[in-house]
Length: 251
Picture 1 (cartoon, rainbow, N blue to C red):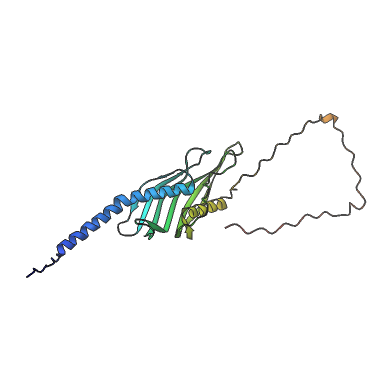
Picture 2: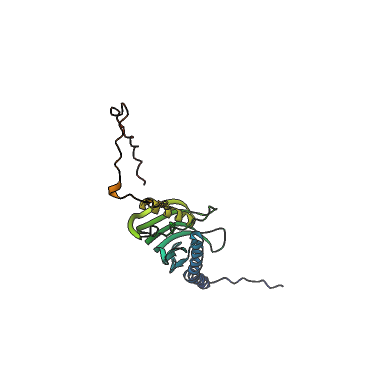
């Protein structure tokens, strides 16, 4: 008679060991591998979106919730401007969900950004150091973006004599919905800075200096005779143009 094959039942102890090993491997992935991947992806996307050099500090992933934080981000000035950071970010906190598009990917759901400072510069040619926005393309929407930005230092080098002024944007927990990725965040940031500081994106054209060709000495200058008024000119009243109503204050 053929022998019947009996299946061995797995013991609860072996099941528990398998679960512990799986949790250990998942923890190692979240602690060691995923932060490195996120740092590389985020740095690449931020550099591509801003077309500027970007430096990123530490990335921390939560083992309990689908969220991570990035500390100490620096966005450096473009060429043609003084060397140094354009913006310094103390921390970025983000919540995400796994992406069905590719294994190990994720989609951002909520992003909160704490800026340390922002240094707006107009160079000698009248150009601002704001990053040029990438052309519109299909991006995953971020459900909610929160910006915290206080001081913005504006330095104007276009007039020959450097001038500097500091503004307090007072952006505290400012919420924006359905933002189009990193480029959308930069677009909001650019709009808020220009609106709240009143700085023009393009410098006004410099007026040419007009100097007289020559001047007569004071003693040789002749006094022109008074021209008699035309009839009826004394009775006419000059009316000043009426002022337009003030436009509502921006923001």
